Image 1 (cartoon, rainbow, N blue to C red):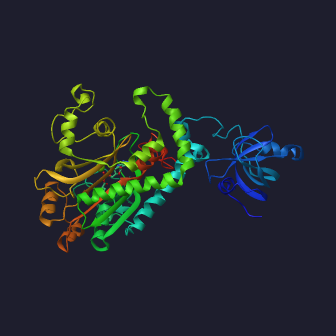
Image 2 (cartoon, protein in one colour):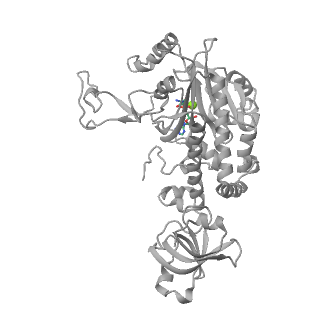
Image 3 (cartoon, protein in one colour):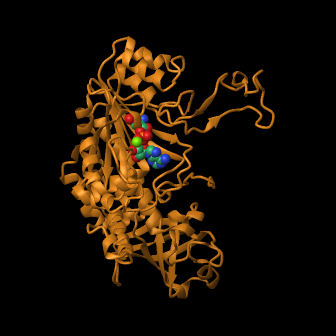
Length: 477
Ligand code: 4AD
Ligand code: MG
């Protein structure tokens, strides 16, 4: 007898005399009907127990959360709601679950409660669907790059540089925190630390990825990144996953084309391959929307939203145009924005990004050519001397989902920029070398993986799309 997955049995529709499955009991009704799930699909399989020939003690142990091993016959279902079901010939309880204390009861739980039980929350339909989609999206990402001639590169997690220059890093040290070695001036002596210098968890693999782009041509990274920014929002994590392609001989226009094609491919992949999970999440979202005031409802269902992104061109708008639109917008004039846009040069907040995407253009937007002084040091300076070849992709409901740029490939301009920002050349000597030996136009971007998963699943809080979220004051599990 072969062990089956529930997904196989349900999609098979064949009638089989002998099947064997293992899974967790979702519900047990009328001492007769087990709804069993094994994680292979959002759907449960119904297993019909012959309660007259099953001993009382076993029946008592079939509780929500228990793991069981079932053998039986796959037959056409007599009841509604499923095509096939299993008539149980033998059931073995593998692991009991106390119904009094098992946190995941067969009822609606709040996402806050489930976050506190993140080790068990994938026993629910919503979280199992979200995490299956997370897995499918990451597969689709590798598939896209693999099919398009990119090499997958593993960049270091521990680094000595601050790639984004924002100073929001977690220190990595093996020094005694209570009694660190000190230099004569009273500062900590990091030359005595494990690596002989100050190190931190990476905020981005980009700078290292640039070294490989300048030899292998087209590369990408997909790994964890860490930011010690104290933003307790529904879109920020202290530990998140980022995808960073980097391509030699590609300019900003090529970078935008790549990002758009890539985003469309991965969203289409899940529409083609993960329909049932998407349909479940779409329904969940519709129910949630019904509880919101009309003005806050999105007007599009989840699957419509995904199709909309795939079928429409992303609108490309310069920062300067965007500032004009925002300055003349109703919420700016009526002081409805928390941060009023007064002049060219102001940084955009998520309220402005969402206005542009959701109210003004009503489609994904690529903003480009930002003021140099609100962007990172490595972005290529434009001929105007005040803007850089940056691009951010803004998505409805999310705001910034991608950040990228054409990189400064001119040694003298890059050195000047670093000097102006007080970035030590000796720390990035190898990065400068790329500009000395065969420098070339090159570009890349970073896609925040969890923001993508939020968009693809319709989940409203980034803490609910990563297995064990790390946020300020929280590193449980
Ligand atoms: O815009 P960012 O900071 O760009 C970079 O790190 C570049 N080095 C990327 C590159 O050009 N190779 O971050 C890129 C994306 C953002 O657009 C956002 O989606 C996500 O990473 N992101 C976060 N996601 C969750 N939590 C945070 N704290 C995030 N910070 C950035
Ligand atoms: Mg950014």
